[in-house]
Image: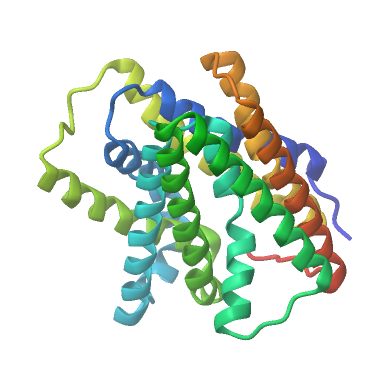
Length: 301
């Protein structure tokens, strides 16, 4: 078997750190509307991907049918809504609460599959789901009692999480016929157009930003996308899926750590407890799913 060019565990660790900076960067952008930040994150990511698409994946893009583009447009709509709701949530609640609530999307995806598509899950997965829901309730109740604004942010984060779960669910079929880069490019490109039209209708400022804010937009496009999610997908070729899933699960912890040291963001006792319970539930969930089915490693990039 061909050996990887470097240790996949390093890629997972680097990817975890890269995706953890997203929420902190959004906070550092200041009073820029969530839809503008989302627009430029997608736009700059598309610009970076264009050379790779032109030289390596243009044939794949040309073969897309009108039906394919309709599905990709829907994906662009969903990813745009996810980013808007997530970034808006950070105006009200903590990085820790927002990040850990959004991390629940695999659990919601499994619940939807069970309720709508009648897919079964193990007793262990059921217990882990109940634990994660308990953790969410602790955060929501604590924020509701202490700060109504934080509760509003939590609800926006939950909305973002639900959209993300739906995005992954609906994108499954397209990912079977498209490479990761082609799929991401097409979805991000359609999302860019959707957000541009939306921002033009709201008449928000689209151009006049400080050099620091432009740097943040570019960093959001590059660091979480290419040094985060792309590294996770690369690591899937060389290591077991649960190892990568756990790395992704640790994003909220990394985000909270960075928010504390960079933003001086404090976390309430209820948020600490709720986040800990959710992360424990997510860990059990990943382990139960890993035991239930044999791991298959994707070779498609």
